[in-house]
Image: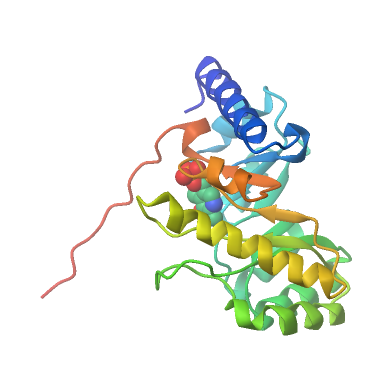
Length: 239
Ligand SMILES: *Cc1c(COP(=O)(O)O)cnc(C)c1O
Protein backbone atom coordinates (compact mmCIF):
# COMPACT_ATOMS: atom_id res chain seq x y z
CA UNK A 1 0.00 0.00 0.00
CA UNK A 2 1.54 3.32 -1.00
CA UNK A 3 -1.18 5.70 0.26
CA UNK A 4 0.87 8.15 2.37
CA UNK A 5 -1.93 8.75 4.92
CA UNK A 6 -2.42 5.03 5.46
CA UNK A 7 1.31 4.42 5.85
CA UNK A 8 1.76 7.37 8.19
CA UNK A 9 -1.09 6.18 10.43
CA UNK A 10 0.25 2.61 10.53
CA UNK A 11 3.78 3.78 11.21
CA UNK A 12 2.65 6.01 14.09
CA UNK A 13 0.55 3.18 15.51
CA UNK A 14 3.44 0.68 15.38
CA UNK A 15 5.84 3.16 16.97
CA UNK A 16 3.28 3.80 19.76
CA UNK A 17 2.78 0.06 20.37
CA UNK A 18 6.55 -0.52 20.43
CA UNK A 19 6.93 2.31 22.95
CA UNK A 20 4.12 0.82 25.08
CA UNK A 21 5.79 -2.58 25.04
CA UNK A 22 9.04 -0.93 26.13
CA UNK A 23 7.36 0.85 29.03
CA UNK A 24 5.62 -2.37 30.08
CA UNK A 25 9.01 -4.09 30.10
CA UNK A 26 10.73 -1.24 31.94
CA UNK A 27 12.89 -0.48 28.91
CA UNK A 28 13.89 2.75 27.18
CA UNK A 29 12.03 2.99 23.82
CA UNK A 30 15.22 4.43 22.30
CA UNK A 31 16.66 0.93 22.65
CA UNK A 32 14.30 -0.65 20.12
CA UNK A 33 14.57 0.01 16.39
CA UNK A 34 11.78 -0.79 13.96
CA UNK A 35 12.89 -2.38 10.69
CA UNK A 36 10.11 -1.90 8.12
CA UNK A 37 9.77 -5.06 6.00
CA UNK A 38 8.79 -4.03 2.48
CA UNK A 39 8.93 -7.50 0.87
CA UNK A 40 6.32 -8.07 -1.89
CA UNK A 41 5.53 -4.32 -2.00
CA UNK A 42 6.91 -2.34 -4.92
CA UNK A 43 9.29 0.59 -5.25
CA UNK A 44 6.39 3.07 -5.08
CA UNK A 45 5.50 1.80 -1.60
CA UNK A 46 9.11 2.14 -0.48
CA UNK A 47 9.15 5.66 -1.89
CA UNK A 48 6.02 6.53 0.09
CA UNK A 49 7.62 5.11 3.24
CA UNK A 50 10.71 7.23 2.59
CA UNK A 51 8.49 10.29 2.85
CA UNK A 52 8.01 9.29 6.50
CA UNK A 53 11.76 9.44 6.98
CA UNK A 54 12.38 5.70 6.70
CA UNK A 55 15.64 4.69 5.01
CA UNK A 56 16.27 1.07 6.07
CA UNK A 57 14.10 -1.67 4.65
CA UNK A 58 14.02 -5.43 5.22
CA UNK A 59 13.64 -7.72 2.22
CA UNK A 60 13.69 -11.49 1.96
CA UNK A 61 14.43 -11.92 -1.77
CA UNK A 62 17.56 -10.63 -3.48
CA UNK A 63 15.72 -10.24 -6.77
CA UNK A 64 13.31 -7.79 -5.11
CA UNK A 65 16.22 -5.76 -3.76
CA UNK A 66 17.69 -5.66 -7.26
CA UNK A 67 14.43 -4.43 -8.77
CA UNK A 68 13.68 -1.83 -6.08
CA UNK A 69 17.28 -0.63 -5.85
CA UNK A 70 17.26 -0.03 -9.60
CA UNK A 71 13.98 1.88 -9.42
CA UNK A 72 15.13 3.94 -6.42
CA UNK A 73 18.71 4.47 -7.51
CA UNK A 74 20.50 7.16 -5.52
CA UNK A 75 17.88 7.45 -2.77
CA UNK A 76 20.33 6.36 -0.09
CA UNK A 77 18.32 3.34 1.00
CA UNK A 78 19.89 0.67 3.20
CA UNK A 79 18.64 -2.79 2.18
CA UNK A 80 18.63 -5.38 4.93
CA UNK A 81 18.46 -9.04 3.92
CA UNK A 82 16.23 -11.03 6.28
CA UNK A 83 15.39 -14.09 4.15
CA UNK A 84 17.11 -17.38 3.45
CA UNK A 85 20.02 -16.82 1.07
CA UNK A 86 21.47 -19.18 -1.53
CA UNK A 87 25.20 -18.82 -1.90
CA UNK A 88 24.77 -17.96 -5.59
CA UNK A 89 23.09 -14.71 -4.48
CA UNK A 90 26.19 -13.59 -2.57
CA UNK A 91 27.41 -11.48 -5.48
CA UNK A 92 24.28 -9.29 -5.54
CA UNK A 93 24.14 -9.12 -1.76
CA UNK A 94 27.74 -7.89 -1.63
CA UNK A 95 26.85 -5.16 -4.12
CA UNK A 96 23.46 -4.07 -2.80
CA UNK A 97 22.86 -4.96 0.83
CA UNK A 98 23.92 -2.88 3.80
CA UNK A 99 23.36 -5.76 6.18
CA UNK A 100 22.44 -9.47 6.32
CA UNK A 101 20.39 -10.74 9.25
CA UNK A 102 19.95 -14.27 7.88
CA UNK A 103 23.53 -15.52 8.07
CA UNK A 104 22.89 -19.14 9.03
CA UNK A 105 25.73 -21.38 7.82
CA UNK A 106 29.47 -21.55 7.14
CA UNK A 107 29.20 -21.85 3.34
CA UNK A 108 27.17 -18.65 3.19
CA UNK A 109 29.70 -16.78 5.35
CA UNK A 110 32.50 -17.94 3.04
CA UNK A 111 30.61 -16.98 -0.13
CA UNK A 112 29.65 -13.54 1.22
CA UNK A 113 33.21 -12.85 2.35
CA UNK A 114 34.62 -13.76 -1.05
CA UNK A 115 32.21 -11.43 -2.85
CA UNK A 116 32.67 -8.63 -0.32
CA UNK A 117 36.43 -8.76 -0.75
CA UNK A 118 35.90 -8.44 -4.49
CA UNK A 119 33.48 -5.53 -3.98
CA UNK A 120 35.80 -3.86 -1.44
CA UNK A 121 33.01 -3.64 1.15
CA UNK A 122 32.27 -4.73 4.70
CA UNK A 123 28.76 -5.29 6.09
CA UNK A 124 27.08 -5.87 9.43
CA UNK A 125 25.70 -9.37 9.91
CA UNK A 126 23.39 -11.01 12.41
CA UNK A 127 23.48 -14.76 12.85
CA UNK A 128 20.06 -16.31 12.36
CA UNK A 129 19.50 -19.01 14.97
CA UNK A 130 16.77 -21.61 14.82
CA UNK A 131 14.77 -21.37 18.04
CA UNK A 132 11.48 -22.76 16.70
CA UNK A 133 10.72 -26.44 16.39
CA UNK A 134 9.08 -26.22 12.95
CA UNK A 135 10.98 -27.94 10.17
CA UNK A 136 10.34 -25.01 7.81
CA UNK A 137 12.21 -22.39 9.84
CA UNK A 138 15.76 -21.69 8.73
CA UNK A 139 18.57 -20.86 11.07
CA UNK A 140 21.70 -22.22 12.64
CA UNK A 141 21.34 -25.02 15.20
CA UNK A 142 21.95 -23.30 18.59
CA UNK A 143 24.54 -25.96 19.48
CA UNK A 144 26.66 -24.79 16.53
CA UNK A 145 26.57 -21.11 17.45
CA UNK A 146 29.80 -20.86 19.51
CA UNK A 147 31.96 -22.49 16.83
CA UNK A 148 30.25 -20.54 14.07
CA UNK A 149 30.82 -17.20 15.80
CA UNK A 150 34.49 -18.09 16.33
CA UNK A 151 34.83 -19.03 12.64
CA UNK A 152 33.54 -15.60 11.55
CA UNK A 153 36.82 -14.12 12.80
CA UNK A 154 38.34 -15.50 9.59
CA UNK A 155 36.07 -13.20 7.53
CA UNK A 156 36.93 -9.57 8.30
CA UNK A 157 34.39 -8.28 5.74
CA UNK A 158 31.59 -9.59 7.99
CA UNK A 159 30.98 -7.62 11.18
CA UNK A 160 28.86 -9.78 13.53
CA UNK A 161 26.59 -7.46 15.53
CA UNK A 162 24.06 -9.83 17.05
CA UNK A 163 21.53 -12.60 16.58
CA UNK A 164 18.24 -12.92 14.75
CA UNK A 165 15.40 -15.42 15.02
CA UNK A 166 11.86 -16.21 13.94
CA UNK A 167 9.73 -17.48 16.79
CA UNK A 168 7.52 -20.50 16.53
CA UNK A 169 4.07 -19.90 15.06
CA UNK A 170 1.76 -20.60 17.98
CA UNK A 171 -1.31 -19.25 19.77
CA UNK A 172 0.45 -19.97 23.05
CA UNK A 173 2.44 -16.85 23.97
CA UNK A 174 4.62 -18.91 26.34
CA UNK A 175 5.98 -20.98 23.46
CA UNK A 176 6.63 -17.87 21.38
CA UNK A 177 8.35 -16.14 24.29
CA UNK A 178 10.51 -19.22 24.92
CA UNK A 179 12.06 -18.71 21.46
CA UNK A 180 12.90 -15.07 22.19
CA UNK A 181 14.28 -15.92 25.61
CA UNK A 182 16.47 -18.63 24.10
CA UNK A 183 17.95 -16.15 21.62
CA UNK A 184 18.72 -13.67 24.39
CA UNK A 185 20.39 -16.37 26.50
CA UNK A 186 22.48 -17.54 23.54
CA UNK A 187 23.55 -13.94 22.96
CA UNK A 188 24.44 -13.48 26.65
CA UNK A 189 26.54 -16.66 26.58
CA UNK A 190 28.37 -15.51 23.46
CA UNK A 191 29.05 -12.11 25.02
CA UNK A 192 30.45 -13.84 28.09
CA UNK A 193 32.79 -15.68 25.72
CA UNK A 194 34.11 -12.37 24.39
CA UNK A 195 31.91 -11.63 21.36
CA UNK A 196 30.55 -8.14 20.83
CA UNK A 197 26.90 -8.79 19.99
CA UNK A 198 24.70 -5.91 21.15
CA UNK A 199 21.79 -6.58 18.78
CA UNK A 200 18.83 -8.95 19.01
CA UNK A 201 16.54 -8.86 15.95
CA UNK A 202 13.37 -10.63 17.01
CA UNK A 203 9.64 -10.00 16.83
CA UNK A 204 7.30 -9.35 13.91
CA UNK A 205 3.83 -7.76 13.56
CA UNK A 206 2.12 -10.55 15.48
CA UNK A 207 4.53 -11.10 18.35
CA UNK A 208 6.78 -8.07 18.87
CA UNK A 209 5.61 -7.15 22.42
CA UNK A 210 6.84 -10.56 23.63
CA UNK A 211 10.16 -10.04 21.86
CA UNK A 212 10.58 -6.61 23.43
CA UNK A 213 9.85 -8.11 26.86
CA UNK A 214 12.72 -10.55 26.21
CA UNK A 215 15.20 -7.88 25.12
CA UNK A 216 14.74 -7.31 21.37
CA UNK A 217 16.75 -4.34 20.13
CA UNK A 218 15.08 -4.49 16.73
CA UNK A 219 11.65 -5.67 15.58
CA UNK A 220 10.97 -6.52 11.91
CA UNK A 221 7.54 -5.21 10.97
CA UNK A 222 5.82 -5.83 7.63
CA UNK A 223 2.06 -6.28 7.79
CA UNK A 224 1.39 -3.76 10.56
CA UNK A 225 3.01 -1.01 8.48
CA UNK A 226 2.30 -1.93 4.86
CA UNK A 227 -0.85 -4.04 5.18
CA UNK A 228 -1.56 -7.62 4.19
CA UNK A 229 0.76 -9.09 1.59
CA UNK A 230 -0.82 -10.70 -1.45
CA UNK A 231 -1.06 -14.43 -0.77
CA UNK A 232 1.22 -16.51 -2.97
CA UNK A 233 -0.66 -18.61 -5.48
CA UNK A 234 -0.47 -22.25 -4.48
CA UNK A 235 -0.49 -24.60 -7.42
CA UNK A 236 -1.75 -28.03 -6.30
CA UNK A 237 0.71 -30.84 -6.95
CA UNK A 238 -0.23 -33.09 -9.81
CA UNK A 239 -1.28 -36.64 -9.17
C1 LIG B 1 8.09 -11.13 6.44
C2 LIG B 1 9.05 -11.16 7.54
C3 LIG B 1 8.87 -10.32 8.66
C4 LIG B 1 7.68 -9.40 8.86
O1 LIG B 1 6.52 -10.14 9.09
P1 LIG B 1 5.14 -9.42 9.47
O2 LIG B 1 4.39 -10.49 10.18
O3 LIG B 1 4.50 -9.02 8.20
O4 LIG B 1 5.44 -8.27 10.33
C5 LIG B 1 9.84 -10.38 9.66
N1 LIG B 1 10.92 -11.19 9.56
C6 LIG B 1 11.11 -11.99 8.50
C7 LIG B 1 12.33 -12.84 8.45
C8 LIG B 1 10.19 -12.00 7.47
O5 LIG B 1 10.41 -12.80 6.40
